[in-house]
Image (cartoon, rainbow, N blue to C red; front, side, top):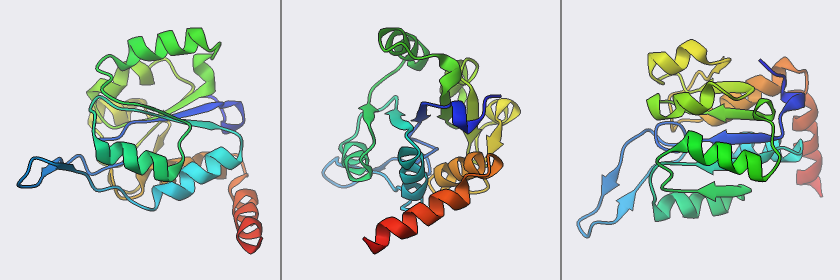
Amino acid sequence: MEKIQDIKYIILDVDGTMTDGGIYYDGTGNEWKKFSVKDAAGIWAAQKYGIKVMVLTGRECKATERRMQELKVDFLFQNIKDKLGFLVKYAEENCIDFKQIAYIGDDLNDLPVMKIVGIVGCPSDACEEVKQIADYIGTPLGGNGAVRDVIMKMFQEAGLWNQLIKKYIYDCRR
């Protein structure tokens, strides 16, 4: 396992990781998802530390696009069925070492990527196969702040979380 100081990218799955995994439709066919505002703190901390945040999801949804714009994630790629194939190509084109990537996901479609990256995290309700290889297992369920929790644990282990909190408080006073 790598350390957070070695990480240049954090890649996040959406369904089951940033959301509870439910897909909701209204009477007109619009798709809805529930995101936790708590995850914003983890994304903010990673970006303040200089880590790029990428969201890589197998589904396409306007709600996901809107939330990622609000969170100001660096990269959003939707409707990616072969996450490993996509990431291998992306990393090659952008000279990224897989060991410089942390990945937070929850299910079998995340496993191929998880097996090649530097750090693996997941929510507490991830499938057993993911939990078995995770370096960090968040306490919350997916969609309930699991992303924040995993990122916080990475920074805490490195002794950097309190420094980021101070930076947050300083930025709020400006």
